[in-house]
Amino acid sequence: MPELQSHYRVIIIGSGPAGLTAAIYTARADLPPLVIEGIQPGGQLTITTEVENFPGFSSGIMGPELMDVMRSQAERFGTTYITDEVSQVELDVRPFKVHIGKKIITADSLIIATGATAKLLGYESEKVLMGHGVSACATCDGWFFRGKEIVVMGGGDSACEEANFLTKYASKVTMIHRRDELRASKIMRHRVEINPKVEYLWNSTIEDYVGTAETGLQGVKVKNVKTGEVSFFPCDGAFLAIGHKPNTELFVGKLDMDETGYLITEPGSTRTNIPGVFACGDVQDRIYRQAVTAAGSGCMAAIDAEHFLAEAE
Image 1 (spheres, helix red, strand yellow):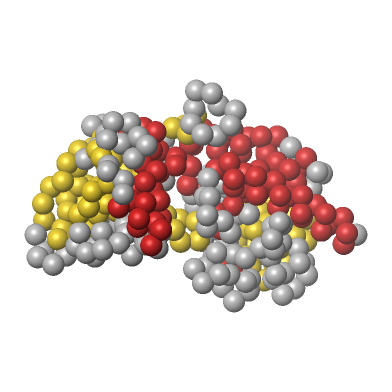
Image 2 (cartoon, rainbow, N blue to C red):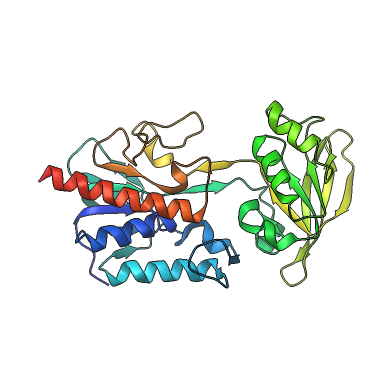
């Protein structure tokens, strides 16, 4: 791998499918980038078990292995990596300044691929069982629960959408919600209300998970928020649909964001409100949030950055 330099034409912050695809494309365009991987190289896919919906792998591939393959591919074309976190970015100067600990590295263009983090409940058992019965992505993992009984935590549009989607596989889906009615939009509520496979546990939250990585999830402990009573609810899978949080803290007050913190890009491009700064993947995609769409937008960001740099010469 090339040695770390003090200046790059392109710096990519983030090392998930979006960031690594951007790295492959920029490196092949003779713009070998620096990828700042963060403390979780590979992003969310590194906590996913088998990935069966990424094109090119007919038998599926483990999430960490997929990211290793993408990382090696980008490295082959000259990408440099640093496994560290960015502490500050200066976007009001040219070249841009990226602070990594005590180092300051400059860049002519910046691709932001810091992703989004699924909101979790934070229990220790959740970490153990993530990928072994606990999931935050119905589209990714629903197929593994054919004929099983599962629960979905949440009551908004995302929860309703995931519950409805999961009934294609599961024999029964129970929505666990802390209120006594769903807070989703009317049309989303209607879709689950008419679905015979969907049931409800009102005024309740998941208090803990029961199971091991070896045996998988056996059920959840459910707390009634009104009475405080805790009971065991048997299930084979638990899906969290309580929202995602885009990893955009670094860019508050510097880049345009929507009301929930997702970076805003120009329609049909990855351009942000600052010329030379591009955003791709889940950090700007609040709708699809799939590895393949993240990779696609990473390709777009690389091409946008290439065009920007060519026009600036």
